[in-house]
Length: 117
Ligand SMILES: [Zn+2]
Image (cartoon, rainbow, N blue to C red):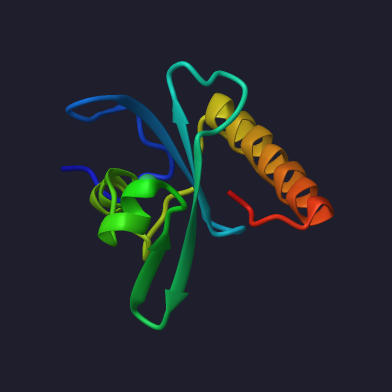
């Protein structure tokens, strides 16, 4: 299995299709679903405390069961200690786009006084 990928391709779960993007600097994973073209479905917070990585997904699964498929997928496909920066032009562009998207979203949430999810 390939680890340490900055972007992962579409990930299939048993029930749904997700696309996950780990943005290392701001420390978030954007979780998109197929039908959500313009807006992410979940925003998973990534906190690193020494060697430990804590993931915090706002979905009901995580709240009710302490973990969820978004967190599980993230742990399976991202190596949080060794991310690789995208080298291909289209991936760099996508990373830039998603970083801007995330920053705007976080600003928006801050303005509204809401939790960033
Ligand atoms: Zn979740």
